[in-house]
Amino acid sequence: MTYYYYLASDQKMGLGTGTLDLTVADDIIPGFDYPVQLEIMNGIEKEWELRELLQYIRNHTASYKVCTVQIANLLNSNKVEMKVREKSKILLHEISDPKQILLSEGQLLTIKKVPVFI
Image (tube, rainbow, N blue to C red; front, side, top):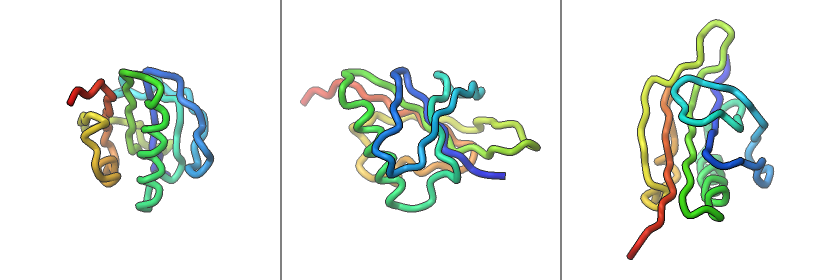
């Protein structure tokens, strides 16, 4: 049994700079609004990995006015069906600390980038 972070978006996702162990995935997982595009095997365990994931999400959304990214921490096992148990949402500009994207097993976080007017 291994914990994976799964990433989905309404826009095509690239593999980033290589600091995270991102691999291409094409899974349909119940609970996601979009097809899963990437996975991070062994999940996210260290603070620097959270910072890198948040930076990856910011880089991914940078060229879009509006964009949605979903991330989930799920147990990948032949014995247990992958299942989202809890959903939450946050606006990208409201994330001030990478720990806001640290997820427990079964959690899915939807991050929306929207125009910000000051």
